[in-house]
Amino acid sequence: MAVWSNRPNRGMMRAHIRDAALPLKTIEEPARQIPLYGEYEVAVLGGGPAGIAAAVAAARAGRRTLLIERYGFLGGMGTAAGVTNFCGLHANVHGEMHRVVQGIASDLLARIDRLGGLVSRTRRSLYPAAASLRTSGSKGHR
Image (cartoon, rainbow, N blue to C red; front, side, top):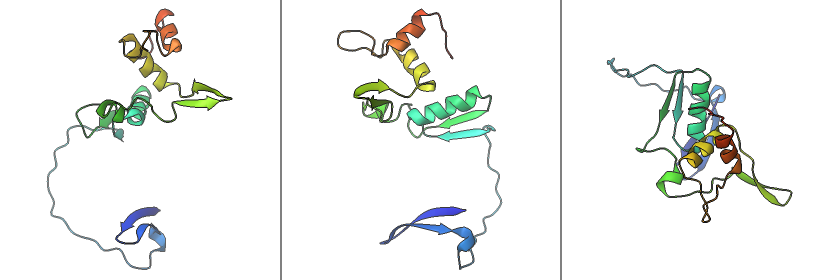
């Protein structure tokens, strides 16, 4: 097992616990009762695009899933600061830009498009695949 720690004035250091020459120190805490608000199989920390996708994937796999977000909204920087370009969603493929991330991202974009959130200045859908999902009768996941 390896851990990363930040050492003052020396930057990040990787230490292998089994290779540590010094014995590990311990502290003792008094016993206490901590309320449980639920029991989950998967806990996802962060409700940005990756966190949303991870939580949806776990829930679709039938796992009791908890998504924990620091702020009162989902979407990460797309919601907080209006950053609408997510690195990795599109890529230059043989000189042309294409969306390369599909799956849960496609489902989410199709749902946003149905709500009118993916329109260009000319009011055409930015994601024709999302429009075809809408017209083909596919209900997708809810």
